[in-house]
Amino acid sequence: MIFSLLTDRLPGDGRKLLIASTLMTAALLSQTVQAEEAEMQANHPYVGLWVTEDSYIRHELLPNGRYVEARGTRERAYEGRYQVTGKHIDYWDDTGFTADGDFIDGVLHHGAMIFYRGSRAGKP
Figure 1: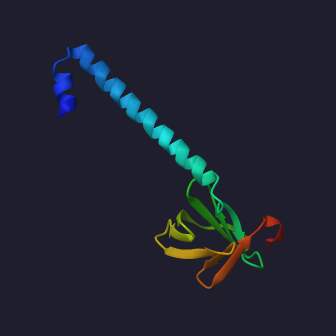
Figure 2: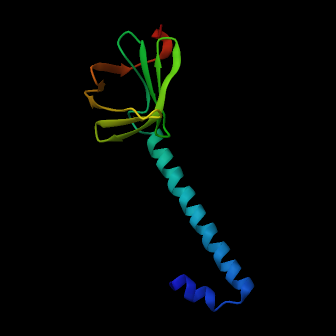
């Protein structure tokens, strides 16, 4: 309502300029927040590769809040998004499947599986 009161008193070009500058400011603020969130996630201690002891299942937690799960030779068996709250992780697979887990003493407990920080060197 206040925005309408301001723009109604401006001539046509002034109104367009005010609206354009307001939209530009909102876009720039949004980009700043998104960049800060991405930087925070990139530095999150759980981002990276997590593997089962035999390296058959590998979860890569990406800094953008997405994950990729590989199984055996299938590099992209599952993909989706994740969210970490404290030491708890929730997964939402792109197919609609949901799952969760907990980080305990540097180990990810996910269902009946246990994941360790790992590298792809040991994959099958």
